Length: 313
Image 1: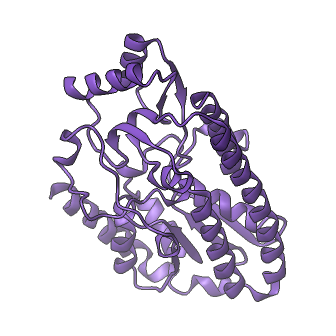
Image 2: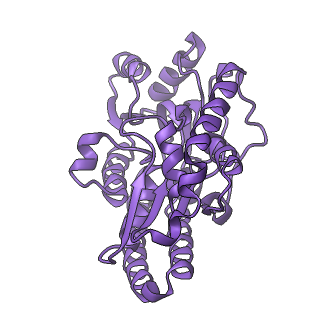
């Protein structure tokens, strides 16, 4: 409750500053400003607007930060109030977006991408403790971009939105979109070939599991310590034992962890089983170094492809 009150006070204070200064500023703006709440949305957008002048896209989530813990700063709220389009996933991690939008007087163009995906409920995991703070029984999993099929729908939705807003450059957006969708199709085919040629072993995640869309799309079995939005990831003895037993009984050679994890649980399982530890990246965010090196969603998924191939040997 204290956190919610503090958050709303920040919004009130910021709006007191920006209310008069920014409401009419859209008429004078020379650059079409787009804000994306996480990395996939940012990267999809920059592929679509590539080589088109007068647009800029910014990722709101700080490098290396978890989207589940994100709260906008006063400066973030100012930039949201002055942007031309905000792209967000929806779901638990983006619950703050609706609060901010409802608190801003001027109308902002928005696109909620969960509206364009085939949704799945967040999967069950080994640990019952992960459900103590949040009840996910009937909640749609928000990690929609982990399925390439959903990623393609998201790319098309962003393209359509930009084409509506900027008809002058509509053809450029559509051509860029077509080219990018072809790249995603090629990546999708690579995944299907690796999975078809691999052993049908379950994937073991000694970590959270934000890959329900990925696993369902490719028909993969899995066992995971925690669901994707778990707030607490300290494993119980029973959770550790079940992961170790699975790795041993199924003769699994790879144990996965996700980006920005402390990897302690994966290290414990690896030490007890002799399996290899590999990263499987959700792509929800990247480090500053990765960003500066120009990493893309496709490159992240290609790295996942290599890790998956090793796991299915």
